[in-house]
View 1 (tube, rainbow, N blue to C red):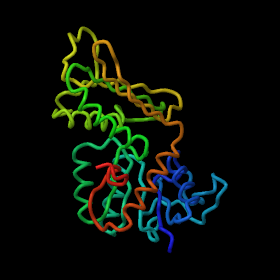
View 2: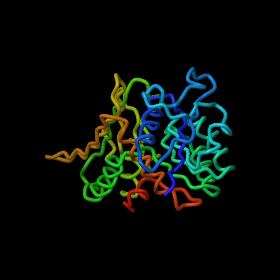
View 3: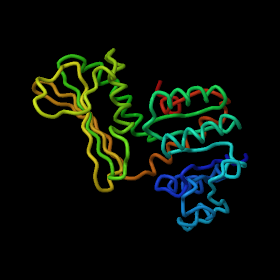
Amino acid sequence: MSEIKVAVAGASGRMGKMLVEAITDAGDMQLAGALDVAASPALGTDAGLSLGKPSGVLISSDFAEGLKDAAFLIDFTRPEGTLQHLEYCAAHGIKMVIGTTGFDEAGKAAIAEAAKKTAIVFAPNMSVGVNVTLKLLEMAAKSFSHGYDIEIVEAHHRHKVDAPSGTALKMGEVIADTLGRDLNEVGVFAREGVTGERDPSSIGFATIRGGDIVGDHTVLFAGIGERVEISHKSSSRVTYAHGSLRAVRFLQDKQTGLFDMYDVLGLR
């Protein structure tokens, strides 16, 4: 069986390097391209050099050059960059796994439109554990629909640029959908001063940023006399990389369509 040819966007970044290493170590995949921004000092260098695993693939800012041999692109960059990659991939039939967060509604709509031309897995978190946690939250919300206050606390490293995290928002969406609520209406993203009593239908968010925290998420269902907490803590980005490779394998027999990690993991 021929190897799956995969390219990585943001190849010189923290997540990019993790993806390059995971692809290099995977027995069924080949690193076929590496992209980064034009200002990156890593342009023209071997994508695996910093890992001590030279790949023969040079990092490029030119889409045509970086993606000429690729059937898939894994993208964990930023919305503006991902949308540029999306346009190129849709036009050239390159399938995408998108782990980028922070998209506005227009960006999400662009991804959905591109999925009519190519196959895409788009999820705010590629971790297998996080997605199993989302399923657990769906189950918990059904049981704690009355008499329990719901709060979501997330913590990430100092370099993260969006808040709340895409994973925290997804957790809120899953819970709100299960309860028949609209997160845009019931989400509370800041509290300061005299806020009055808590609205029992609200879903609160708290954000922590500091140090090198990879990603911690806890959902509290706080009732009278008891509190249930469902948590997921990441100690390494490798879990996101491994989940992304599972998403690539899932897309192999798909030509078009928009999918998420529930589809990849069979959690529907």
